[in-house]
Amino acid sequence: MESAAVEVRDLVKRYGRVTAIDHLDLRCRRGEVTAVLGPNGAGKTSAIEICEGFRTFDAGSVHVLGLTPDDPALKPRIGIMLQSGGTPQAARAGEWLRLVSRFHRNPLDPRALLERLGLAEHARTPYRRLSGGQQQRLGLAAAVVGRPELVFLDEPTAGLDPQARHACWDMVRELRAAGVSVVLTTHHMDEAEKLSDHVVIIDRGRVVAEGSPAELTGAERQLRFRARPGLNLDELLSALPPGSAAKESPAGHYIIEGHVDPSLLATVTAWCATEGVTTEDLSIERRTLEDVFLELTGRELR
Amino acid sequence: MTTLDLSPAPGAAPLARMVLAQAGAEVRATLRNGEQLLLTLIIPILLLVGFSKAPFLDVAGPKVDFVAPGVIALAVLSTAFTGQAIATGFERRYGVLKRLGATPLSRTGLMLAKTTAVIVVELLQIAVLVLVALALGWSPHGNPLTVLLLVILGTAAFSGLGLLMAGTLRAEATLAGANLVYLLLLALGGVVLPITAFPEGIRPLLEILPITALTDGLRSTLTGVGGFPIGAALVLLSWAVLALAAAARWFRWE
Image 1 (cartoon, one colour):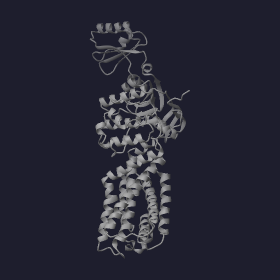
Image 2: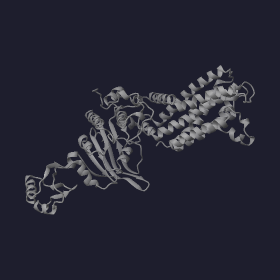
Image 3: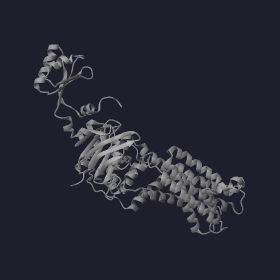
């Protein structure tokens, strides 16, 4: 059987007395896009950089394309994009990409790749004079120029404008269509939802949930509406079937969770009518990945 | 939209091609860097011309015969030590060493590329300085192979020291430190001022500096006064072994 793109078992990584990765299991299948989500400090970058061979680990096993991360045979087969840095400040965009391409046997044409990512007219611009979005795109170009089997992208769209973000998404979709495995980290839930086959949510160095975006968001639906703040939700709940939940967050925005069906909708609107409350923007929605994420990892700032 | 074939076709390029590509990029970066050119070419040329004409320089024989070997040693110092330390320090700071570590170019390949780049730049420097010195009436003697050996030993010693600095200090500290060391060694190492100008008490100390060994070795060879400068070669060899071992031991890539 072909080995997984990434197979991490029982991984532990400590920095001094801080345990950054605490018995993490991670499996990324070949040909799929896997998104790794997690709050800042959850261990995403540590995990990715261990897979890329940049960091050592304390316990567990890590295999990337069936090889250990320190295996020199792995380098030509993976493409990486660091979260930041990695390019000489004075290097011209085109020269840097051509240099990286020369390290590979069958590279893409650097000029065509620059053009594809909208960087052709900046080929002679030194890296430090590119905008943040252009620098990110150059990093993405350098990650794919060697025609790798597996690409690691660490927050590839952080700080990008919408055009650049879409260009990056298109590239990820094209990579997937071409049979390349992609592992990316992100803070953008919509990005994970749109791009990935598999989502892994990490918190405090462990996997707290994983599955396809549809599996994670589940079949559960929510009823949302706006009304005047301060409705008596206990009273509303007593009218609803057991197992329902209601909350007001933020003030004047109400969310009813539970078995959302026409009769529940009727009950809620009827209750509002007897209370003399006019509802606005009433809608039935699936939970978003962001809802799931916040539920699992909490709302407090870290 | 351009169509690109993104389907996997991985593979490392042959080592020689990777090393040449990286070395080429490093040579280009050096030649484009204005501050580096000041240290590697402009200051050595000014010193060569200035001290060859200086009325106060008190040495036996034509002054250019004394100054030319000194500025060749300075050229080696400026590229192998100062330039390499600063460039590598900032590559480390900006994650370039880390990023290159994720390419098929191995660390050995990277070191080969850096050495190749240093040697290419040195050859360019020496070619320019020799032409200027010849125009000033320089008449070099001695065995070119001895000169080559000394330059190689000096390059190894200064590269070791430069990489040790770049791999252990912050980039800003390396920038300041590498320039300071350049100035100190320029002043103290017999480059343009004979070390006989310094008090006798500190001379033994000055004589074991790598720059003094390189300057003396080149000077005695190129003026054709002595045989093979065994003492200078041994001092340089010791520095090379110690500095490269220390760099290999303590160099941090990130």
